[in-house]
Image (tube, rainbow, N blue to C red):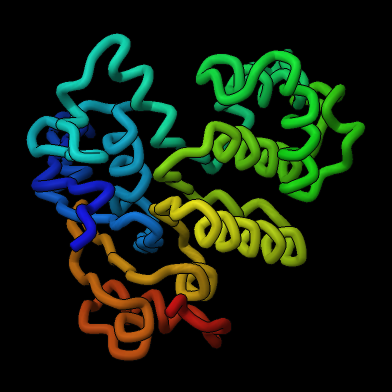
Length: 261
């Protein structure tokens, strides 16, 4: 039996709001297998982005555990943590906030290749060109400043940077929401192709149920900091059992696409 890639158990995190503590995460547990996409859906403020930041250690949990690639993810420090970070990448909803605005497109990708020693210095230009092409951007964009390209282009650069280091898990937080329909389709196809080629796992966070259903093997539903429903994508969408998911489905005129086999 294949060992899980990521196992999170009973993660909790609260924030101060209006003089009281609000539970952004309330004993959240989930698993992701190698080569699997877990879709995560829920209304605004339900805790999806907080969970992503806790899993990537951008925020510490107040309790709970995370095992990643068999290691205690929360216990890693120093050089071991830096080396392990290569294997878990995140694509944010707002890519500009994740970049040095003075950097060029090629420089952003080059930094990832250099820091994680993915390819040698002589091979970097060719690898940068390959990655830029892979996400559907023109080659001459490599010399452009990050702040001088469109939001959709920045999001594709963020995806290129994430896949540059050949990760085992990518967490995508509304990563295609800023893209137009045709570009979104190409990026989703790219993500599926990469998964088939390399066995990368995804935590795919989105408010778009049609997109989540199309790319996910399983779907988890969050509400008020908890996972309230989870299961195979086709079953969860066709026979929802939680009120939050029923409400989300009711807001979508028609769900398109087929779930992953």
